[in-house]
Length: 557
Image 1 (tube, rainbow, N blue to C red):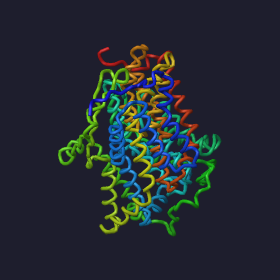
Image 2 (cartoon, rainbow, N blue to C red):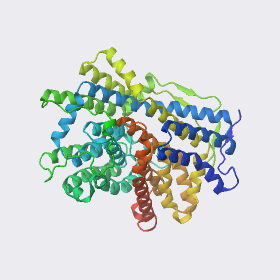
Image 3 (cartoon, rainbow, N blue to C red):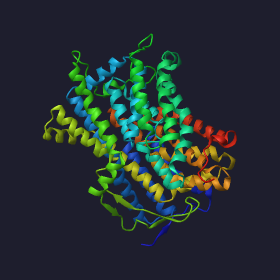
Image 4 (cartoon, rainbow, N blue to C red):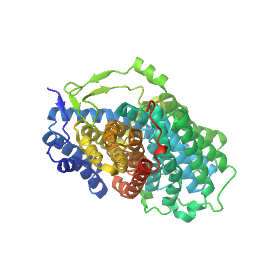
């Protein structure tokens, strides 16, 4: 098979080429939002259409398209599906032993107020998990925890998705930053500074927005002191660590500090009125569809509380270690076989202006099983399960029961990531990116929108940065925009696209046991995703034309 060069205007009409390139993604979103097509069928139909468009319109050889889609499916399951499966395995173990109900009670003792539980778990605890593991872990864990506390599926899913926006740009030990470094050629500290400047205002505003969505302004303002503690104790460390320390530990540090500050603050302060309604303004009465751990018959002892927290402490410790360079290097030595895909590896050539110079695309499956976050979660589940009193046989049975329970979610995510990989390798993503780069003076705004779309489509800020980081830099040069600003906008804009990332919505649906309701979640959170995407775009416009001094300079320039 000969080397194939990506084509970005296959119809010799940029408008028509862009419309055709966008067709599979638009169709996917419409099918899911309609709630009339099962999500896994919608993903399968969109993938089939993408293969046809890649082959017949973008001239990608059929065999190459199928191999690319297959690689995306396998790699996607290992990196994302593996996390979901094992997080829910751990959660089901704690429920079966009655420990999740104890965990629920202990959190309720910190605060019984539903607003403060959202701040504590979704915003603060979720931020720490994003920094430690990323790739869907915080959405799964937070959704499951809120469900265990009695929140409705829609409330749990939406709060997990909203809270995740404050942390995605720095992700799992800085994975999105590293992806942007590789594609843009800009050093990590400079990107970290630029993204930190853009992220802080939104990190500060998001807790207010979340509670407003949950209970309205009046009840939100009643807990303003707590919101300020959560917002400031996260956003200030976020800026300090991103600007002065390291962009790779931002979320772990800021999330941990915020969580500690909230726990200490809630020991000495409580609102005048305690709100205990877990649904509030959310239009959702689906509690009957979901199994929620029953309330405790008696108050737990201190020993029971410690046992209930132990699985989650184990998870945090293991994932923090799993993300260290030490473990990654050791695991690479122990077991990390590479499987170059014949007929795919180095056989696709990305072309300017999507990349700075013709670049051969890798088509390699790296089976780094020991470094997958999901493997760390599985180890946590096994250790915690043994400490909870499960036998090895019991753990195996429970794990296979979990597979059966989330089978449709795993199929959906595998198909979604297959589609995302193919859109990148076929040049479809490049065509969409070039359409935004052609917007002239409005490019700073659409630069953020491009990142928004990239994450909405791929489900990962890391993937969107790898896909479009180089394009942002290349497009910025002829338009005379600051390269650092455009690269940062891709990542910050992507944070807001995470709200409607199909993979994240599927994760939230699976974690809450509300499988098949992805369309309901998407319709509910979509306006918020649009609003925050526009806000990031306006901020980038402001930086480009009014306050250019807010963009850190590149070293040597």
